[in-house]
Length: 321
Ligand SMILES: CC(C)(COP(=O)(O)OP(=O)(O)OC[C@H]1O[C@@H](n2cnc3c(N)ncnc32)[C@H](O)[C@@H]1OP(=O)(O)O)[C@@H](O)C(=O)NCCC(=O)NCCS
Image 1 (tube, rainbow, N blue to C red):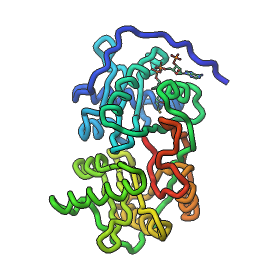
Image 2 (cartoon, protein in one colour):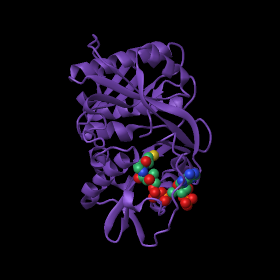
Image 3 (cartoon, rainbow, N blue to C red):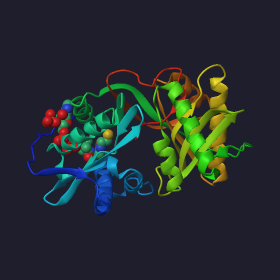
C-alpha cells in the first residue's frame, strides 16, 4: 500500500480559459499524466490514437480551462454542459507538479461553470482504486456511487439501415435535435446532449444514429469512430445513447445496439465500445447477454450524492469521460 504524497501549495498558479496556442502542450500533458498514473513505460503514448483535447476545445472553448505556472501550461480541465446535468474531465496536471493543489485550483472555476450553466446535478468518472482521486473530488462535493464499465464487443454486419443525423439538413436537423432533447428529458428532466451531437457532426468525428417509431424518436446514439476521435483506431465508441422509457424499452435497446453494430461494421471499424453505469442494471445485464465484456471499470462520482439518471430502469449508455 502506498503512503499519500505530501501536498505543497504553489502560489503562482494562474487559471484561465484555454487558448489555441495551449493545445499542443495541453494534449501532451494529458497523455503524459494518464500514462504516468497508469504506469506506461512510455507515458506520452497514452491514447495516441484518440483525441480529447483539440476536438473539445474547438467545439466549446468556453468550457476548457488551463492552469499556467511560470508562463507554461501546467494542467487543464474540460467541463461538459448536458443541460440540467454536467460533468468534467479529462482533468490533468503535469506529473512534476502533482500534489501542489493545481487540480484543486482548476476545479474551483469548473464548479463555477456548472453554477453559471444552472446544472442541477454533476458527475465524473474516475479511478475507483485511487484514494487520491476519490479524496480530491469529495472535497468538491462529489461522492462515489456505482461503478461504470466500458464494455465492448467485436461486431459483424447486421441488416439494419439506421437514419443518420449527418445526412439531415437545416430545418430537419433542428427538429431532430429537439426530438433528442425531448427523449433525454423524458429520462431525466432537462438532460440535453445536443452539445455532443453537434460536435460529432461539425468535426466529422462519427455519427449519430436515430431510431424512429412512426413520428416519435425511439432511441439515439452519438457515436465516435476511428483515429482522432474519442474512439481510437478501428473502434466505434458510443459517447451517449438513450432509449425511450416505458413498455418495450428493452426491445428498443436491442434495435439500437443492432443499429450501432451495423454502423460499426459498415464503416469498417471492428469493435463497438459503450460505457454503462452499473446502477443502470437492466441495460448492463442486456449488454452482457448480447456478448459485451468490460474492458475496464471506474467509479461514477455524483454531486450531490444521489442517482441522477443512473437508475436500474434507465437505458442510457455513457461514462462521463
Ligand atoms: C489527479 C490529478 C489531476 C490531481 O492533480 P494534483 O494537482 O496532483 O492534485 P491536488 O494537489 O490539487 O490535490 C491533491 C488532493 O488529493 C487528495 N488526496 C491525496 N491523497 C489522498 C489520500 N490518500 N486520501 C484522500 N485524499 C487524498 C487530497 O484531497 C489532496 O489535497 P490536500 O493535500 O489539500 O488534502 C493528477 O494527479 C493527474 O493529472 N493524474 C493523472 C490523470 C488523472 O488521473 N486525471 C483524473 C482522472 S479522473
